[in-house]
Length: 97
Image (cartoon, rainbow, N blue to C red; front, side):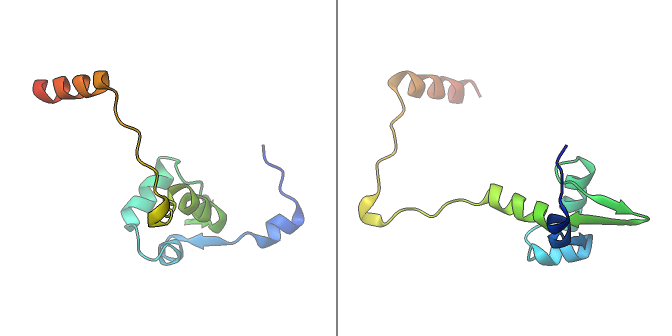
């Protein structure tokens, strides 16, 4: 169980579903957000009939899904090549499909 002190609690901001969608900039559909809450991929708080999402949790999801920028073009490192065995397995799987 996470212990939340008074300063952390004061910094928290609960957003209703429409506010959370606006905070995400319309990147996902309302149905997706509600699905994440229903499947418990996104923690939510029910206050009476209103469902709220902690802004910190939205930030956490954004950070988890962020793809880092590529390094400068001159310093690109080559991708590791697949081993000959792996190429063989991939080819066999494609043939059987």
